[in-house]
Image 1 (cartoon, rainbow, N blue to C red):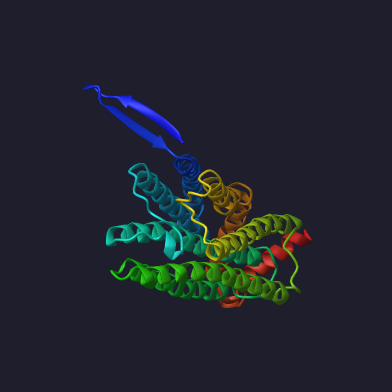
Image 2 (spheres, rainbow, N blue to C red):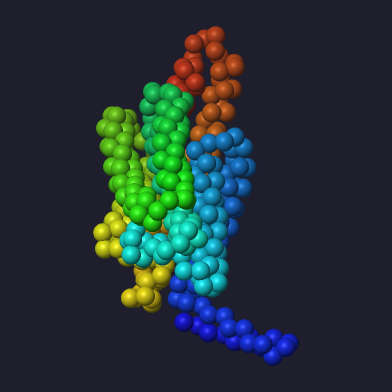
Length: 343
């Protein structure tokens, strides 16, 4: 506990106390702000390459949203803690204080911490679709890339609709005036839902990952460089999958053992440290790895796709009558890449 005394002009003493929770939240805020600045620069660079909206640009926008929501939640948590508003983030009925005002603070704290988790899950699925796009661009194939992208976009929209609709209903129920037991039940459902959503999303993504590898097993890579670049993107994708599983197990542990993440009188030092490490390992580290380690490879795929699409459109205008162009220019893209490899 850090205690700072400030003397005013009228010799009044103002005491400012910073707990270990406040310090950990401030450090996390700085790290998320750092991620935000990096993501902003990456968004500007990819916009110069492809001004239109694509999966890669949506991924960066989603990361920016995660950083903004996390920073807002940490600032809110720190402000309430300094103001001595004892809000709780626990499913236990015993830790929920009496009174409508206190239940509102507890519900607000739950929403502040749970909403970014939902956005991170959506970002994880978006990262998988970016990997799928890079996967198609790395192989010589006769499939229509446009059709595959439409399927992924539809799947992403349906997933987000179900995800955010469920969370919105739960948030309304937890804020809705009621008894302490009803608020506790809804909070427990939110814990269980977030744990289940993380596990289900990882299993769904792993299933689709296996399906794509089996579906395109007979198609070779365009070059050794594209195979190497895809491997780097795959490593970052594996890191995100591992972090989602770890976060799901952490939420399950919090739910089963009734661990208070924000106001734990039994371990006021270790709980903030564990919370900070969990945020660093499961969110900050994967974001930095995606923005730094694999981003260059993602940009390379985007540049190659943009050039191939431009070449395909040019050939489509000049030689469409000769029947040299397949659907959406995919045959031209396949043939030109094949000639490059043969040369």
